Image (cartoon, rainbow, N blue to C red; front, side, top):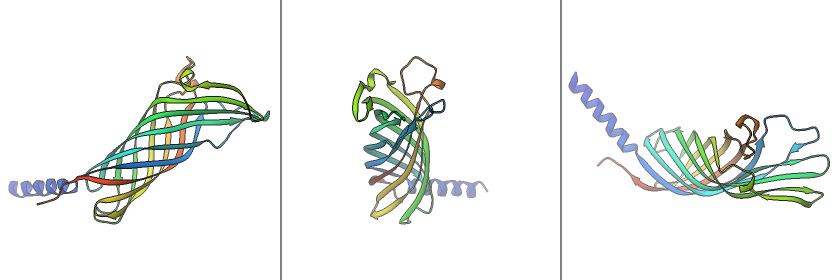
Length: 218
């Protein structure tokens, strides 16, 4: 019995080692970002479309055939835009160095050409720049650098659903629909975190993953 269990454990370990892959490649994304406010917006005030984008690189480590971990390093343009009935527009452009770390579950099998996936994990943001401005009838009335009104660190949660498409060999086209949900307040106004606006965003990310190593049975 002990011999059978030992053989089963060896087989399981060998299968896990065989599935281990490490991939790296560029990634870009585009979407819409907004600022969640603790209270309802004033009457006549609305949130408008605010383009967001990111560019950087992704590292994916798959330690068994259906599970993996990813880490990104990217420049991310975020923020939000508000408009009121007085034709006043307030825009916040917040630029972060983003480091999302996510656990991934892959569907289908390792050798399939298409592998749907879901992922979830924390996102760490470090303010790099940006600005806030108020415009009335297209004329800039006030402008301020982001470092003068925004916190330097942002913590959030990233969730994504997407798929990997096999290109050739171990190269994959990576595509995701992503949602970002900030936990920490954006503005450095001395108030409590619950009284502060928080980052949010939805977008599409694409990239190509190239193998760094692929451990195979000999």
